[in-house]
Amino acid sequence: MGNVYKYELHCHTSESSRCAKSTGAEMADFYQRAGYTGLVITDHFLNGNTTVPRDLSWEERIELYCKGYENAKKRGNEIGLDVFFGWEFNGDFVTLGLDKAWLMAHKDLDLMSRNEYLDLIRSEGGYLIHAHPFRMGPYARSVNVTPKRVDAIEVINAQNPDFQNKMADYAATQFGVTKVCGSDKHNAKLLKRLAALELDYRAADLPDLIAGIKENRHTVKEYAISEVDGELVLKDYVQEARDDDQ
Image (cartoon, rainbow, N blue to C red; front, side, top):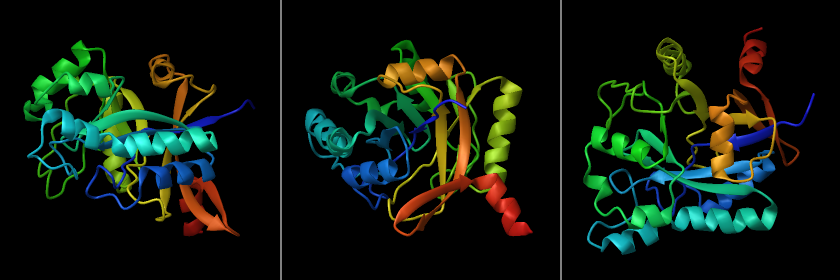
């Protein structure tokens, strides 16, 4: 069996996401210890649960918003972890393939409606993932799946109950949408479950990673994670659940 390269597509930092408990550098350290090759920082955007004040200029807000990614990237460079940039729009849409300069040039992006935003991102060459489409909570009181306006659906979210992931997987199958996964991780110290998008090659950059997804060279996996003698240990989540039931 050849090498397997693990990537995280959905992760938050405390510099930019109000709900996160760990810094970008701490997240980089965690994923390196867990054996991942790469990590995409996808902090909540300015219309979500962000730490960025609203009374600053657009340029100041974007500078602050990118701090979590930039700190993770700096640490990743030191420890050999590939760290890429993305964001989560309105708590639902992980956005990849566009950069800080693009954000700087699109003032008031956070004021766009959902459909306006999705159409703009795809027209600009971005890659859209509908994150946890069947999650419901204080900020999401109804389900609204948009398979024709996204490139992929997150069919494993490590923070979701299994039934919500199964519903997402079923929807992706029925609509013929690419299946991806993400841990939606907010705390590097909390050990429970992790998702990993796995490739048979090491992506040179984020466009190369996206190309692998488009070419269907990826698999989606979920792991149970624990710490044993100071080392992080990943075990197949489905098999671990079966073993626990025996």
